[in-house]
Structures are given as C-alpha cells and as structure tokens.
Length: 291
Image (cartoon, rainbow, N blue to C red; front, top):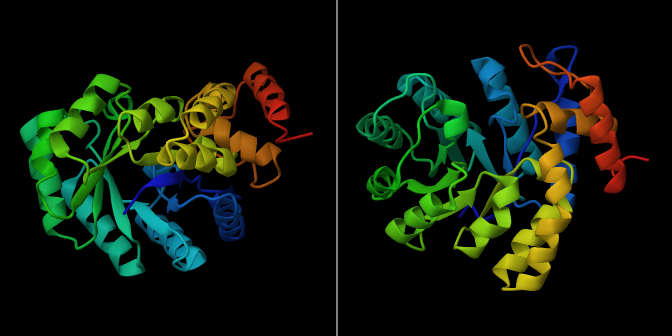
C-alpha cells in the first residue's frame, strides 16, 4: 500500500505563508523523479508550526496536485489524541490516502498509553494508518511488542521507523510479518533497512534527489544488491549534509539554492550558520544540484 520511495516534502513559505505555487511545482518534480508517495505535514514539513487551517491547506493542495497519480500520506499526528483525531479526519475528508501518525511528543506516554492513543485514532478514521516512531524527536521509543499489539488493528498497516536501531527494526519485522509495512525513516539507513525486509522510505533526501532515492528502492525490490549498495554509498555525503543542522533547515536551504523555493523558515528554526552553508554548497555542487 505504502512502499518504495516516498518524500517527506517540505512546506515552502513565501512571506511567511504557504507558497502553493512552489508546493505544486515540488510535487511535479517529485513525480517526474519517480517518487511514489507524497508525505505532507511531517517533521520536514514543519508541522509543529502549522496552524490547523494550514495543515488542511497543505494536505488539500497535495491531494489536488497528485490527482491520484501517487499516494498522499498525510502527517496528522499530535501530542493530543483528540487533536490528532481532528487532523486525521480532516485529511480523510480532503481525500488523503493514509495518515502518518507520530508518537505523542513531550507527554512521554507509557507503552500502554501509546496503545490507547493509536487504538483510539484507528477507531475514529477509515484511513490506513502508518505509525511513526522517532525517539530523538519525541523522547519516547515505541517498542516492538507495542507495535505488534497495534499491528493487529485492521487499519494500522505499517510503521515509519526512525529509532536508528536495526535490531529493533528486525524485531518489528519478525513480530509483525510480511504484510505489515516497515518503512525507513532514516535516509542513511535506507539500504540496510530494505535489506532486512523494509518496504520503502519516507525520505528527506528525496526532496533534492528523488530519482536516486527511487532508484535505490527499485534496485532493492528487484534484488539488485550491487546497484542498491552502490547507490547507498553514492548518497552517503548528501544524506549526512542534509542533517548537519536540525531538519528541515539544510534541505530547505538546499532547495532554495536550487531555485525551487524561497529561503523561508518558520520560527523558531533559524538559517544555517555561515560555515555550514558553505559546506552545503560544496556538497550540492558535487551532486550537480547547483552550478
């Protein structure tokens, strides 16, 4: 359902507001590059600083721009269960194909609390749900036994795993079976995760190199180990560069340097420090993304 290369798409702003024209152009760039799914309003889309109206706006633009050509997996998570329900139901009405739901941040719920949160959400929407585990952002790690419990709910169909632990991801795959979609949430670990049975990626790097990330996923799916490994090492430096400071600052800066969006971040995010900006330019030139 949600496999292969999907992009954690940025939210372009112009004068502090959502730049619809730039967002539509980014989606066309992604589709042309082989991306199979658009994921708006995730961490990379600065979801934490979007109002409810802006969430609805961005997801609505994505659904309309994709026109069924690729899937839209809408980021609708929150640290409030009922706020997440409202956002998810709005995305469902807008025509999204699924919902990406992060573990509640700041609250630090127990594993039982996580089960209650996601079970409630699943009962309030007909959308397929992809769980999202990213302990570095949320301060809570959703453990494999918890994922196994949640995987028994019909419309919880997968997880975006960004714990950084291949052991944990292996355990989830072993517990939940081949029909449960385990998706990489770490660009540097994409190939290793695919190699142990992952189904795809929700990628930051695909914002700038959709063709390469898509090719890596396709090579892995076809069993072309040599090509997948080669692409893994080819993408290593850009993967590192796009996380030299807090995501999405480097990737939005890269897209601005490529002429695709305005260099407009929403506070409290701040521009790259000058030395990192120069390092990023060097890397982008190496990948022929800027002249």
